[in-house]
Image (cartoon, rainbow, N blue to C red; front, side):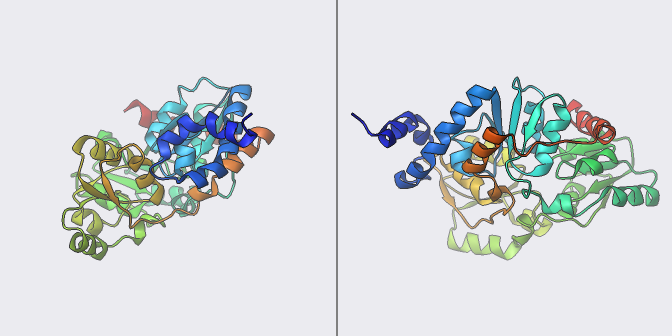
Length: 328
């Protein structure tokens, strides 16, 4: 008779096949119990797990039902047929899921999973910007609190920011809170972009010297950069785009060797599905994304913690900004 541990590993073996390139067997053995429990809890509670591209492979490939960048998660959140949504990501993403599913239970496994961009601006700051530039519509990056979204005209993600800006009938546009995203979009549009000075603590660490050193060390490398990186980094890269665009680039162009200037788990998650691509990994960890673990996803489903709630009046205004984005 097989041991309980052997039975567990056998049950989760198909999932391990997805990640065996990036997770060694001994490490998967420590994950299998939580993976198995989460799958059972999802069935029992009619729950789904939405996971951002920056989640670790055991979450991304092991227990998530829907994976992607902020834009895809926002879109798919409107289609979810479940009673409970667990957001494996950061707090603003869970708030967005709740905005689009007010009648559903939305859980964030760790309340400390925040975002340096979201923390860089308040609703009062937006009102001051409006007072200073009354003719400029406000585009709020999804990496903002619900209160900030409520003060804005429309939301955007890194994947659709240019399209959102171009859709507005105005000569100048306020983009907040990511200064580098705003500067990178400004290079692609004739509109005047007014930026806030928020930065992503992961992407702001990359430098143009990093890219030049990478090319010296790996002459055949293809460099992909996230548009939250400084403009001089984007200028040195071969391609800049959202996490979804990066994944699409790798899977369609098939570069033999690639580096992704973004959060570390992004490379692991794409590498798991593209064994023929060599990934160079000088990446930066997001401490907030890494607060989400298999154990606290399991705990969230077992205890209903932590449920996301939003003031109804703020939610109504914020929802309009998100829905305007999704309509484009």
